[in-house]
Length: 308
Picture 1: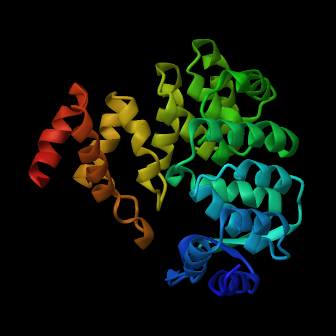
Picture 2: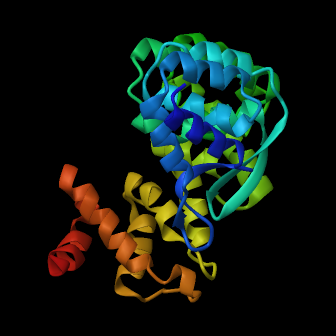
């Protein structure tokens, strides 16, 4: 490698964690790792990056080389990932101000999942990587709901998905909902009921499932978790707005009306004092792409028109 690439690689070897986000720490300072990555990307060939990703003594260097190859949509990413799935040595990751440990194989998948929406991989590359993660990693180590959110509902996954759902695996919900199979409504409701009984509030898996498939059969769950949430101090309405919008009814209208009219502003903590503004912004974004449901039209006329 030329000197610039070598300098960037040496800098990565001094790092004790991989920065998933550009801003890290309580102050949100920009991580210098992104500068090292730009330098390594410009001055190392894809063959050199693949070698680093497979063999470097620093797992942080290896993760960044893999990340750069993903952004370059290079065909070697699949082979790199195959090799990484056998490595369970712990590494540190940092996302915002959160710092945590993961096995190396899980960390490679976390990098892929975090950058997923920005990647320019072909459909075949995405399918190959997703299938490797689904069958080569998750079937062995467990199904990660955050990863499943990005997977497409390929028929080849369905038998395993249905089997996991029947075993009571809530994490499978985000992918199961993507099939929108009417015969799965009972499966999904069973998982929703078990989750609500165990947790007493909405979970990530359940939320993503209903956002994906807002079938009338699941309205009972949306109503229960939304009505429970707004009774609590310091609730965060942003997580519940997609569910309220998906089920126009008297109960959802009343919650939105209470927030917008500030009759029930239970968010007394400073961290959660923007429920009204977030609700207005969410509704405004929705009506840009589709007219409001007739039941919600009065809210639009009363609050959004006034804001505009």
